[in-house]
Length: 199
Image 1 (cartoon, rainbow, N blue to C red):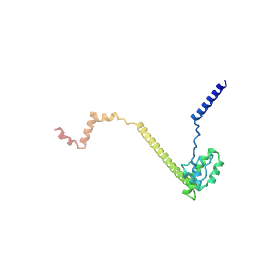
Image 2 (tube, one colour):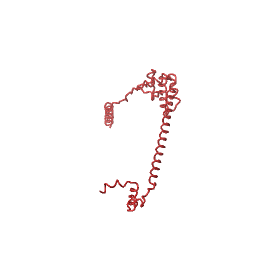
Image 3 (cartoon, helix red, strand yellow):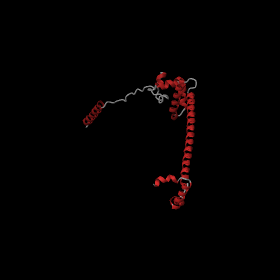
Image 4 (cartoon, helix red, strand yellow):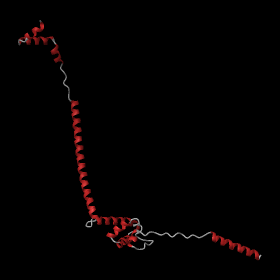
């Protein structure tokens, strides 16, 4: 009985040892994260919950350089911490746009671009109003022309035709009228003109 227990224990130990050697344990690989563009430029360690990392990826260093040049890193971090996460992306885009405008125009910055765009909008609105006024005038002229044409066509259809009097035809074809015309020619000494025709 003791020998059976010893054999069982030995077998169990051997199986556990074989299993331990046959199945090596793998530790998860250590992922090395690249620091964000902000931490890389500032030369500091990029922590796991870095406020700047989601908005300044390592592939866009110029984005943070431009904003840092105008606003400064501390002001950018402070502004992002005061805003909810849903508004931080828009805030970063606005800061980068303002920084680019300020670099192009150090005096007016973004206000200069806005003023120029407002002038363009006013000029385009004036051109649009003038075009609309010209279009209305053309439509009025066209309507007046169509009304005049319709009036002339109506008057031409309503104008009465003068019928020919039957007495005018009888006057030229009756024998009595022919005799009167002959006597009129004789009285005026024009009958001689007809003599060569009758010989």
